[in-house]
Amino acid sequence: MSMGWSEGDPARVLVTGCSSGIGRALCTALHERGHHVVATARNVATLAGLPVESRLELDVTDARSVAAAAEAAGPVDVLISNAGISAWAPLEAMPIDIAQRVFETNVWGMLRVAQALLPAMRANRRGRVITVSSAALRGHPLLGLYVASKTALEALSESLRLELALFGIDVVLAEPAAVVSSFGSNRTPVEVEDADYADFTERAYRLIQGMRVDALTSEQAAEAIADLVGRDDPPLRVPIGADATRLVAERHTVEDEEFARSVLDRL
Image (cartoon, rainbow, N blue to C red; front, side, top):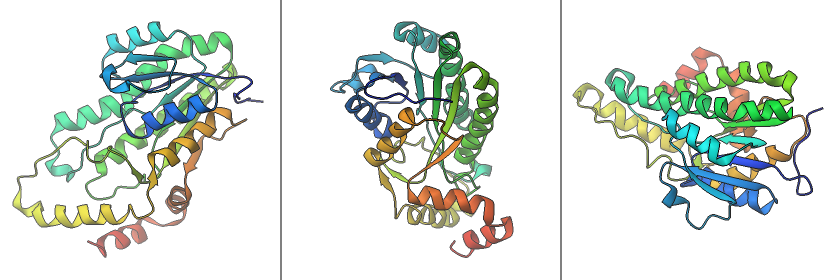
């Protein structure tokens, strides 16, 4: 049986992407539950004021930065892979270098940090990797690149869970829907110069904004993700919030044609 950690048996938790949003809120939520938190960000100065055990510089896209942070952190019980970026644009207009940057952060960044921290978890025969994914894993207009990166992340996590199970290590996907944070405003800008896409892009953007009516706060999402540290025998996928639960169910019940019609009718 896979046991979670509690206030009486606190975990040492390393969280990536703690400068703002869910990651920052997670540090507070985990600290309040008695866990020992290692907060990380590309700019360590952004971590000032967080109630954590240590603050480390970590760029998940840089192998040397990952190695240095892993050495400084030492063995951890739980990795919460939260660092991520997005870029919104029609795929025809998406610069390949920006697309590569999104995958470098969202997919390979998770794998780099996991590879650096997993040996200590295996030696201890206990550990947990919690990866922040998304409940909206269908190809919405403008979101194709982001959704593709999270879909790749989910496939890697599913395989990783099976590979690590015999070592007493869980892999869990936390799947929030919309969250009110700086994540959207901090997305990588893409200039769409093709006039054919101008009106479409504006309408698709309004559609995305309309999907955020029931958005969670960063604190609400963080509390639900922090729960996963203490949960016994967590499943692979855990929707975060009621809207996420609905979206995850629709992924398996709404046929492709019905999904396409529902999007196109609102554009």
